[in-house]
Image 1 (cartoon, rainbow, N blue to C red):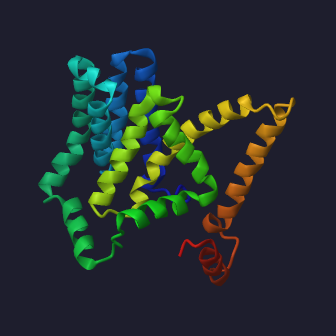
Image 2 (cartoon, rainbow, N blue to C red):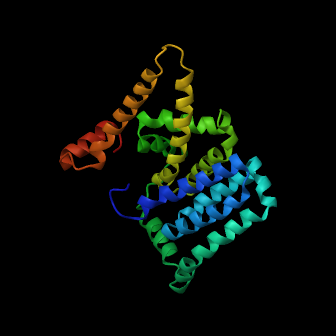
Image 3 (tube, rainbow, N blue to C red):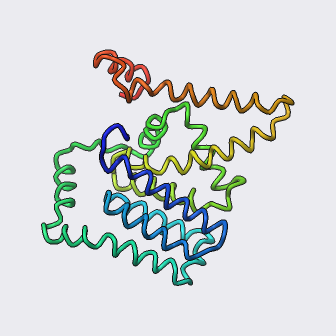
Length: 246
């Protein structure tokens, strides 16, 4: 994603930053941090309009979890106003030029460029996109956020579920969900570390961690040929077919 200098390279940073702010609010109860969320969300909207959908998913998570208590405080509304203020120049430019982004999206829809996937194939593509070898990490993180030891941060797990549901309902591109996976992988890393600490089959706690590190290295090695110019075009296509990502 970051091999090209585009808005896609920065989008995960803004989303992960917003998630970090939410985690800090849940952990400390400091509602003033919504101002930081507003700054990140506002600049994120300037970067890419799909942050609107991330914001909608966060809104759903706020309403559906105990985080809804923040709605009775002024800070979350001030953060929303700050995000809107930062996004306002972009919105005014869009209005002055006939909303070209909406026109572009409509043209793409009419051209049939986007492949519309049913729900199950859409979810399957999530597994393939991040790498099947890494699926246990982010799925474990999601489970931990929703019902596990990290359920104090359930709002982050609900944000993912709401975002995934929204994009499936919109028949969006499957990779639109990609920027939120660093959140789930971070949660999965915490869950994995706690699980490794509880292992009793060895007195040397370094071995489970070394095995986990080796697993992550193998996962990375599998995708290196996909994102670097190591293979010829013909071999790259053959490798993609072998992995099942074609």
